Image (tube, rainbow, N blue to C red; front, side, top):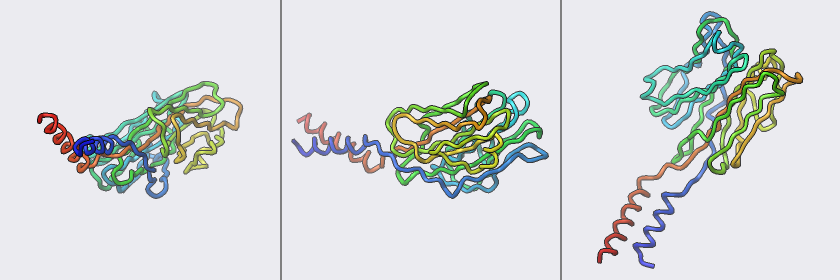
Length: 256
């Protein structure tokens, strides 16, 4: 095999390799509740880097009609990041919102309430990829059930994951306690005991994943949402250059 062909094949393999590294949870999840005057929940002075994902999960005790919550953060929204919110409602609403940070800095992240009449428990997570990696949303899941036996979410991924991160929120009308799935942790056990669960797992693997947070009560209405985040490698400029050189050499040889 010619040198040009060897170079071409090796560079094609180098640029097509799909790798997954563990997502780092920066510090510990932060927790906060709604302000008694405004109803807003704010996490102040959160320092992030470009490439980070900031994820905010919220379990509330109000419906969308009574008190729809809106995700917001300081800075130039739409320029310094790309944001999205996933929500579900049965009797009450559950939310998971995230920002893909393009410009690092120190920001305030909030769930803004329509009015102060609510109880909402939130957790904020800063997810960071390894060097040469980027975070992406692998799948999302929602559940609404007027007579559920727990928060049950299922995910299906485009490829098998080796190390991914799930963040979820769930809420019930009766305020009955949740029993946490063994693969998950909660940064707010008190809220989970009152029917408002925020939880996460760093143990997500495989081509599918599911969670089940049982109720202590037999059945209850349930609204739950979840997002699984994973990573992929970012092609290095040097690899792209090698590919270009390999293609050029191969083309020149074919023209002789």
